[in-house]
Length: 94
Image (cartoon, rainbow, N blue to C red; front, side, top):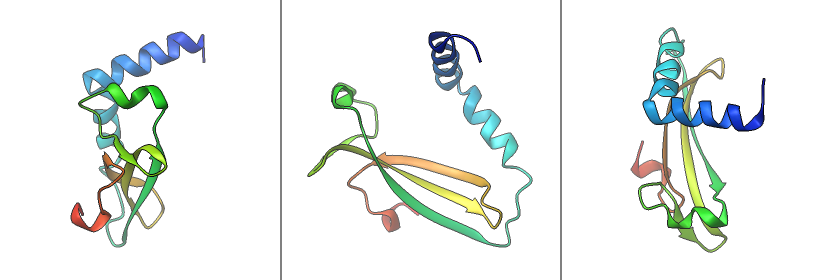
């Protein structure tokens, strides 16, 4: 895949420009919408990420955390997602 730093730089550029989100949206166009499943998972944030103001990171009893809410079709293919801080209830956002 190349040098790790090159991969990170490309990922960062694509993420910042919205290219990754565009690719994701294009791949999720032909989905089976008969059954949809929603789940949320807590993700622990790195200790140095606490200073980033515009990110979805919250303080919790276990430290800094975020939560990924994912919608998948009946085959497990991702359709959509949102990232919130770790203290949000899943039902309040879905």
